[in-house]
Length: 267
Image (cartoon, rainbow, N blue to C red; front, top):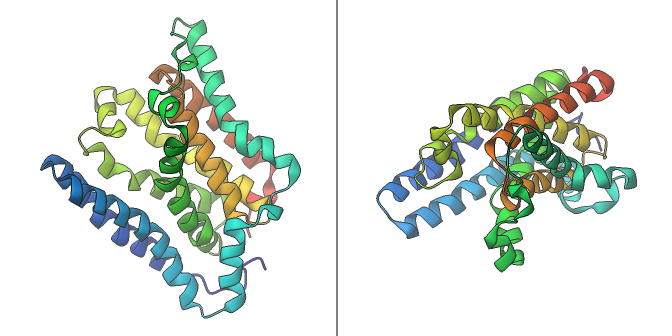
């Protein structure tokens, strides 16, 4: 099943997604300011649940059993992922991060990425679990599970990808105002903050490219998203390296858009 026969509701998805995630996310921002750890934890969990919920509500509202089955199959079926795509999914973005650091070193930066994050070294399984749960899993079940296909049912692949990337970037705005968050720390470096938000556009296009070339595998998108977050969290990259990485990812995204007309053209 390719989902083309489904009556997608992209506007409903976007409204539900932001309604069910931003309310608890902004609540988490307030909880952090008032030093309410319990409320903060609950709010963050609700934000992740809301992301998945926005997709599930619309998926099950179709009443289409084959579409519902397809939604879950795309989320766990490894056989949808083509063998030659595994290196791209698992190592593509981490390699771009290392390339960014290599360019940074050549221009006077430090080689700090060789030192892995202390939390990862002390509790690797816990680190990986939380990195997966808070980000790749709920966000991809929402966007690749329903959101991207719903946009592509109305627009060309490129426009759908850019809209999805812009909305994904917008979603992270509350984190900028959350005391102690990585995004909040970026307020001290406007160039790095701009790079952080812009990077979600090429990343979305690359995730989209992998998703459609692996039988609409949400699992492939989850793993690619996870590898990107892992590279950003586990490797201690300087901001200059991350900015260079964003430029590399942008070049890669432009290349695949130009080459893969089937994915980024009209559905």
